[in-house]
Amino acid sequence: MKNIFSARRIKIIHRWLAFILGIFIVFQITSGSVAQERYLLMQLLTPETNKVESRIIAASPSELLKAVSDQEPEFNIAHVMLPSPATPNSATVLMGGRDPDNPHMSSIIINFDQYERRIINEHSMMRSGWIGTLTVLHRWILFGKAGVYIVCILALATILMSLSGLYLFFKTRQSAKKLPIINRMHRSLGFIAAFFLIATSSTGILMSITAWEDKNTGRSVFSSLMNSSPKNHGSMDMNYINADLALKTAQSALPDNYYLGAYSFASDHSPNYWFAFFDDKMFRQDILINGMNGDLIGIYPAGKLEKGEGFRKYLLPIHSGYYFGPLGGLMMTFIGFIVILWLISGFIIYYSNRKRA
Image (cartoon, rainbow, N blue to C red; front, top):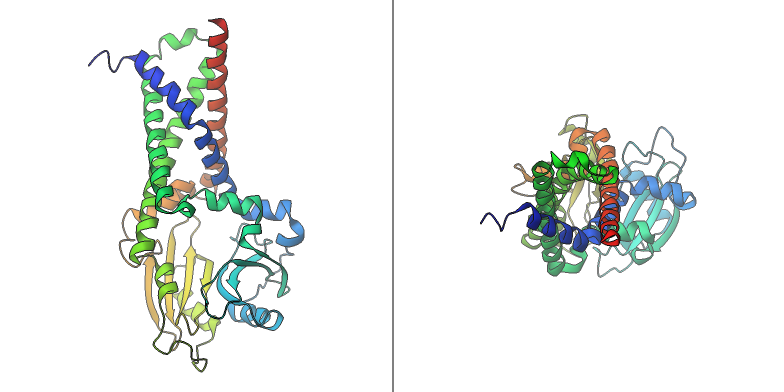
């Protein structure tokens, strides 16, 4: 047993796991950082379609609905995604379609100027650019159940690699003082990287599993809403309360530090208004408002109809680093690039040793 867990064997395991997982780790860190800062990146790289002139008053839900109906009467809004308060000069994103038989379609993306109340441009989801592509690929759910299995296995292997690195760090801390500077830098970067990778990998595994389960069991508020249909489906005579009144009711049910991140309108295919709120730590609260009478149906932590009150509500804040506020999110992105430097230094050490040998 002593030989099995010797420092030499652990070092070999650690090295080969790093080689095998290197591309996966770099991709996940890069795509995660892009996803976290996508609004800022889009307005910096494509300002003509994603940057707007920030003003005091943005379009309310009812104003947005009227403007889009006037400019694109055949377009059906599936849901609206709003930029965070940190990027108020980013355009609002509308997802929807024009198929009257599929009102839940969200394959068309419209960038909307919420201050001038006008459509900036329109494109398909497949042409959302590399930022949108990386954002979607980061979650792996695009590949279905197989994608969930793959990302979980790779994330578990990443945790094992991180634990083996920590073991080697403490096991060889005395002899490490005589190592070349790049080896010592690799050790220091690896110590930071290990805790980062363990935190992001473990929460990423849990987020992937719970998101897949919620989607298939109807536990997700949004998925449940999209699958609901009133008895009088197809009728165009239903009278829904004003969207702004529904939003006001939803906002009054939460503390003032929550901001609106996304919403969808009540309509004949989905009778309730849906609002998703976040605070500065990325804790999420979804709210449903009855589209007919404006009553509050419920408040759902972590966007789940059930089981969102426990550890699930902490997954996104911890995974993104926003559990420690916006500065924590920025630090998480910064540490992610430290991990990339750690991988690069490890490859340099390996090839230098081979060359000397």
